[in-house]
Image (cartoon, rainbow, N blue to C red):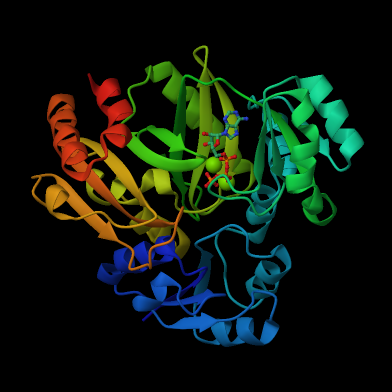
Amino acid sequence: MTTVGILGGGQLARMMALAGAPLGLRFSVMDTSAEACAGQFAPLVVGDYRDHAALAEFASAIDIATFDFENVPAGSAQWLSERVPMFPDPRALGTSQDRLAEKTLFGELGIPVPGYVAVDTPEDLEAAIAKLGVPCILKTRRLGYDGKGQFRIRAAGDAGAAWEALGGQAASGGLILEAFVPFERELSVVAVRGRDGEFRTWPLTENWHVDGVLSASLAPARVDPALEAQAVGYARALAEALDYVGVFALELFCRDGGLLANELAPRVHNSGHWTIEGAETSQFANHLRAVLGLPLGDTRPLGRSCMLNWIGRMPDAAAVLAEPGGHWHDYGKTSREGRKVGHATLRADSDEALADALGRVGAALGREAQVAPVIARLG
Ligand code: ATP
Ligand code: MG
Ligand code: MG
């Protein structure tokens, strides 16, 4: 009986534990909150990741460790990895925790990125805005997620407000200014690499964000095969450079028919949730297979899928459950503004059938705006 330890006990850990049950796996999760929703399915160690006593308690109960979020302090991941085998390696985590290190790696591998400048002082910010122009986005280098730790600068005069919002974090982890990309689409590559180096990807996913938070994903994305091959090539280069083991996602902007890399998420990813019902093997199952050194599963899609995120509070499930290809995921969290509390996946055999299902669900839930861009893409 193998027990997998997961650092971070949110919905990603929860879905990983659900996917691991048929493999006969046990799980233990560690989180800073006693309310962590994966704790409903696996023993939960509550503690600060920097607390070696809590980490030691966690380590004593597990055979192998992985992550459900990328912001575990690098030192803690390192400490744990010296006691329990850990995948992905803490080095991959360290690179993707810092937007500057990540963009530097992208550059080394020849992966195009939006213009960016490191910012540590208000004077740096003024100079960076002058260099990149407006609009642009100031981001914390570390600890951002769901669009948190970002300030959109529309005019040079916004510099003061941007510094006021984020300057306090310049001392702790630094800031980065990025050129705003007026992209036509956002795409992601969800990929998996095994311990033996075998590399697979699911079909590209197209994503729509609202206020920096993922709202909807469509897979397979309708893209030119050459563009898809380029995206997959970037993901493979990153996986090999980091000697990555497990699932990760590469977020991309598509602009003028070309690709720019936004960020790498060193974990299972929200834009891969559709794989639970929409692919032969889900991202969660394949992450576990990779981490455990088992053969990787087939990533081919089963029809067409659209995932809709539920943010803040769960809607009524009936309209989704009434669809032949409707699947419901309630993460068991309490409602809170801006919080990811669940998702639905609609799966169909044709674009037309998927668009029809999205239309019915959007109307029934009063979420026409959420489904509209996906329906437009399918049309
Ligand atoms: P995640 O939850 O994906 O980890 P995050 O907080 O790390 O989010 P980003 O992925 O950097 O944030 O940004 C969130 C979203 O904001 C992007 O998916 C995109 O829609 C928009 N965005 C971010 N950076 C840019 C940019 N340079 N130009 C245009 N849009 C951007
Ligand atoms: Mg991110
Ligand atoms: Mg992102």
